[in-house]
Image 1 (cartoon, one colour):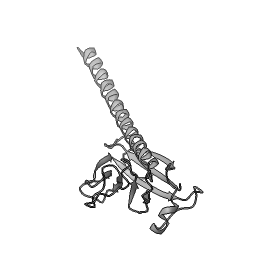
Image 2 (cartoon, rainbow, N blue to C red; image 1 turned 45 degrees about the vertical axis):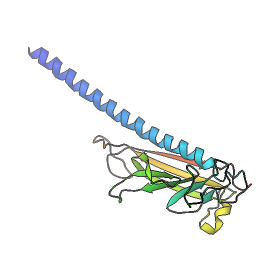
Image 3 (tube, rainbow, N blue to C red; image 1 turned 180 degrees about the vertical axis):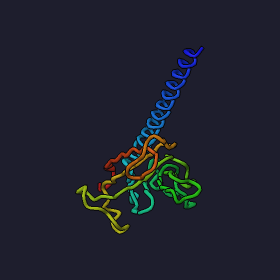
Length: 193
């Protein structure tokens, strides 16, 4: 009976250890997938910025330090704003980051299309930054007066696991969340034409 209890204790310990490893790996995969999915969708929408088949004349990307705004005439009707001054669906897209100081939506990127409200887009995001670049890919655009000079956007998304791992300590943040950083420089196809 003693040998049986020893074997049972060893099996239980192994099972619990394997379960913890599985949970950590699941958290990491979810974190990476969240960052990649967010970056992929943003990339597709940013590449369409400035699409203006009728020559209506609008800025495809509007400089804003707090949120990323993208405009494109997807339905080819010659405008992105309707007669009632509402935006056409999916022709005016805005991404905004809500950090830890926001009590309702901490660590989220939210997305708004057309005239709707901000909706959750990516959760468990440690940081979301974007830099507007000129055609040389180095010089930053820093004012809305230079909207027509924006040719690229450098986006950085830093995701974190949704749960803390007591066996891990992040050396930068000195907490127990794992993080994954993804950076991309995106060139819209329709700007500067």
